Length: 306
Ligand code: UDP
Ligand code: MG
Image 1 (cartoon, rainbow, N blue to C red):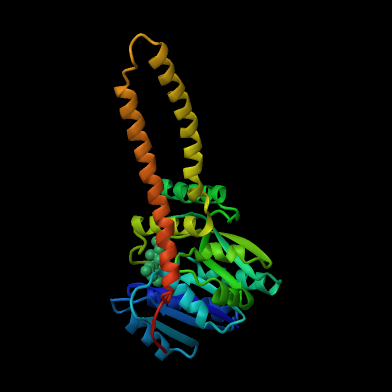
Image 2: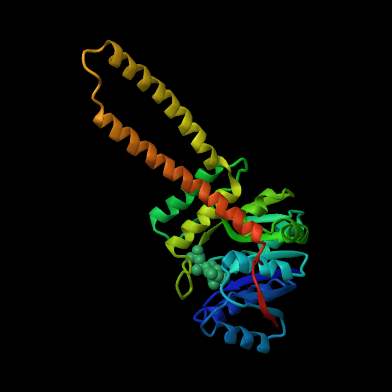
């Protein structure tokens, strides 16, 4: 049996259609599945629609309602925590993760793969610049991190229950990048490419700011490199300072007039202070993340499970 984990946040306009499409795929391919909808604190009628779906179906459907909006990643983790299948597929409710690929994913699982990462070749709704930025982000993080992540891995994936168990026990970080985690647990893994179609309705819940935060989470949880930046810049500045000192002393003792260095001073001070404050900021980010981890607050809170 597979568990389908679908996170839902204010998706009233598409839920019914999405479910029809998923159901079609499941029944056509005779896939034994439990479906877990995680209602991530929706404020529209999503909860009611989910209940209606559950009432009218004979499928094993669970609805996990969170107490408030905890974010997509937390919702997926809630679903994974409660899944009972031999394998688990996480997907979006907006059909940008085509259900028609489910049989292919299950096939890979049957071949013995524990992890099937879906690689998004491109998103039809994304501008050229957004697709490019997403590719750049993966390049950047792979350069920084000791781990190598598949480029354009999406949060559409299949994991075996063995992998899920590792996530449930060992990856309980508050600041996380779930699709990164599943790539570093090990196990046999494979990928399938796909093109994400446009949303079947509604609007994207990921604002630019949210994406930026997700990217920062990913960098902090996968790399310590930014913390070393200070040392490198320090070395560079030390070299520079020595040159400046030798030059200044030379002119002071042997020159005709003492060096007038207003411009040099202003430039030197403003550049070094700028760098210094940036570095303090970077350290601040890591300290802040550490603070969050130490508080050990729950990743999500469940209001009720149907
Ligand atoms: N989602 C969620 N919680 C949130 C934001 C989004 O559960 O705080 C769900 C949303 O309902 C959808 C999936 O996560 O099923 C992906 O969100 P969206 O389509 O808005 O992101 P995009 O595809 O634009 O990156
Ligand atoms: Mg989407």
